[in-house]
Image 1 (spheres, one colour):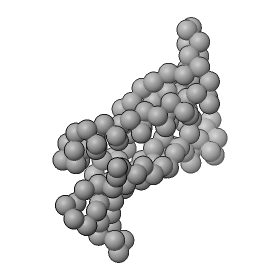
Image 2: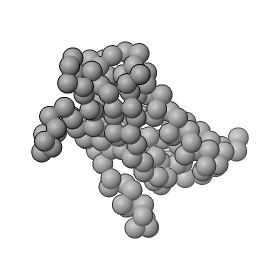
Image 3: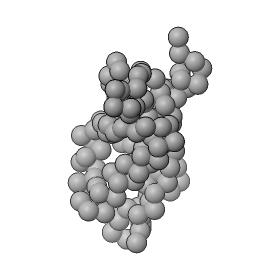
Image 4: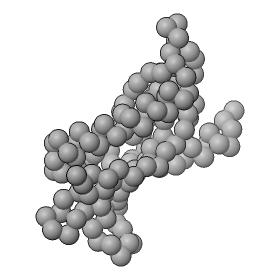
Length: 141
């Protein structure tokens, strides 16, 4: 039976909000939310396996603290790679490939674009939500 906290974490949608600069449409900041799931047992090598379903990212860690730090690190790396190294078009193509869809914004700032994820599938070994995060990454150098 899932706890109330587990149900709430599972139901938080992953999202990406892209903020653009006025000139050229360059991405200057990204706000994002995602869920991390942990495998239901410790493996024989002493590690727990973690999964970020919205981004199809798997990693491992020995402790929950290490798992949280690694989750933040891999997500920062994901955005830095796709936005800074590959460019805006490649980034938008990649998040579309992952299942994120653009949603209409009611915000007054037309330079903010929000994307929500379609419901990701979660492998049976990762049924326990570990944590949910909401972060902001400034891209401008």
